[in-house]
Image 1: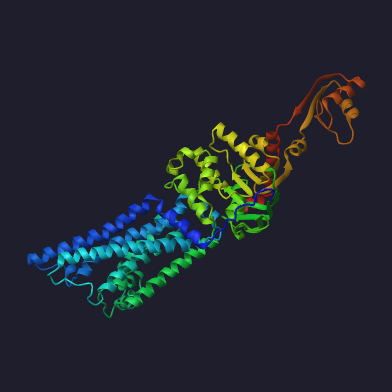
Image 2 (image 1 turned 180 degrees about the vertical axis):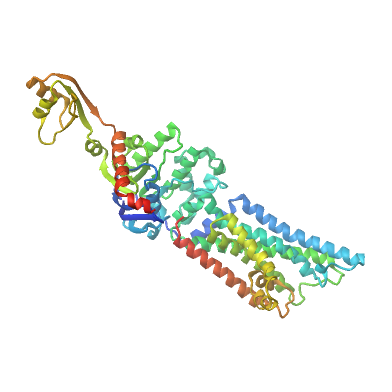
Amino acid sequence: MSTTLAPPQYRVTWRRVVRSEWAKLWSLRSTWITLGVAMVFLVAVGLIAAVQYKSQVGSGNPMDDDFTGATAVSLALFGVNFAQLALGVLGVLVTAGEYSTGMIRSTLAAVPRRVPVLWAKSLIFGLVALVIGTIGVFAAFLFASGIVSGTDAAISLSDPGVLRSLLGAGLYLGLVGVLGAALGSLLRSVAGGISVLVGVLMMVSLLLALLPSSWQDNVGKYLPSTAGESIYALTHDAGSLSPTAGLLVFVGWIALALAGAAYRLVRRDV
Amino acid sequence: MIEAQQLTKRYGEKTAVDQLGFVVKPGTVTGFLGPNGAGKSTTMRMIVGLDSPTSGSVTVNGRRYAQHRAPLQEVGALLEAKSIHPGRSAYQHLNALALTHGIPRRRVDEVIDLAGLGSVAKKRAGAFSLGMGQRLGIAAALLGDPQTVMLDEPVNGLDPEGVLWIRNLLTGLAMEGRTVFVSSHLMSEMALVADHLIIVGRGRLLADTTVQDLIREAGGNAVKVTAQDPARLREVLAGPGIEITGTTGSEELQVTGLSAREIGLTAIEHQIALFELSPSTVSLEEAFMDLTRDAVEYHGTTGETLGRAA
């Protein structure tokens, strides 16, 4: 008003919100630790599975059920179940962590239109989880392949479905990261977000076992966990969705969570 | 410039802010006063869009806060509750906010120096003392070089040096022509910095006034007189704009509208013996207490049925 110098022209833009969220993600120690844990899970668990398989093949004893029909791909993907927890939890922290600390007030005062923050967080963390997941999965496959070469499980990257399966696993992990971020934002609580995430990814399919078998066949394949698994499974049977269908269903679930999160973000006070 | 019209916020049955209307003008420090729970923080959260009003509206420089292209350049706010992630350093926190607006790093360094955080800027904000946290909040408020600065209880947790720093900062910002809106529940603190006062109690506007007017309206310059014949003194002093109170049977009177000198001269003229003649200036603190106590009583009686229903 009465300032003589022309004030600088600042402006909030979508790209700037993304840059801000990028800086926020990497300025927290928990990001580095959890991403490291996810990577270790992927590589180490895949490695252990491969070593275990190799030793059972060599011993001549009957194999564990887990290992019948195993391939280097399925062994390498043993770690996905663990890594998805680390990445999903970090996704929850990215959004819900702002509520538990009070940071959300600073964030939304800077970006009062609010939804760009949710999109930026989901996009950035989804991509980071995708990259970490993909690198981890391919590393696990390389190690596992080296260990099981010469056994029945040996499989090459050029074999049908192998590349698709590994890329699918990376994509799945990226989407789990987005799911975590959406749930964290929707529930505004770290504990609540993690609980629902674990429930969705691990518990719902266990509960399904209590339902009549006709239900299990019809409903089961559309659940987030089973649909997600179809994205990266090497083989598909009549009871499971194709990779593309699985991807569409899983993305649908995430879109639902994101829509709920966006609605609540815009409508509710902080 | 902040303008609130019929601003109302209800949480279920409880009304935190009740049809509040006021204007905060540039170039002065406006104090926002009220006892704890009067709705000050809720009002400030509504100004920056963190809470949405149940009804009514509040605008900053003519627009709702969220409609501005560069909100941090319009209003810099320090809110009551801590609004940082304890895992980030002061620098990282401010830089993340700056990035959303394209505010250069140079400005981040500037506000760090301005807030006296230079030596701790790289430390985790979670380890900050209350006062340091407060300084970081103020640095964030000044980041966008805003036209309007709004601080909720800024002196909380500050040492005397910090309190002095805040006072100079506020008056300096107002002198630059900015709108400065500061809340406090301490009248004594406000009296030192604020020119204008907006006083609220139980979510309602009690007074929109200046420091001088408040003292005058609260019967500021009363004179206590003890006389041999209070009834006659009352008669001879009576006049327009003069208020005299006293209880029957007592020799003591409270006179407002006349100076001690005038009362003394009138008394000697009518040969009334005086035993005591002392001006009693009501402090700002007392005026504030009077005002808010009235509000509480007012709500306690007329709002009873409402209160019970809740």
